[in-house]
Image (tube, rainbow, N blue to C red):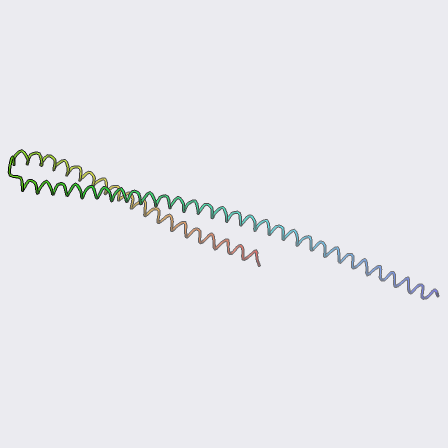
Length: 177
């Protein structure tokens, strides 16, 4: 082999070594870029997990609120049943009063004695009826106020949840892009 071809081979080897060094540097640069992207991907996964956890917490809180509202609704229904029962009692008492009136008209013997007894009973029943009606009216007003407040709170909670849900969707869309 001649010196010239030996030099040519040596020069070619040096050129190849230079190309290998360049490719090694380029490979290291790409590896650094890949590592940066992996870190960014990990960060995004962590943030996404945090957002999912927050959303789960919000959902659990809202479920608890809904359960509480269901419980309140049951209580309102129970109160309504009590009110209905009291109204039935009032109707019953009114029917008793009407029966007493009929008995007074039909009863001719001992009219004065019977009339006094029935008057006293009638007055007591009217007082009981008035007290019951007043209590019922107060209970109805309180229940109506509670119902209105519950409805207002429900509407506010629903609007708040919709806004939060929209915000989370926007955030998720940003991260997905």
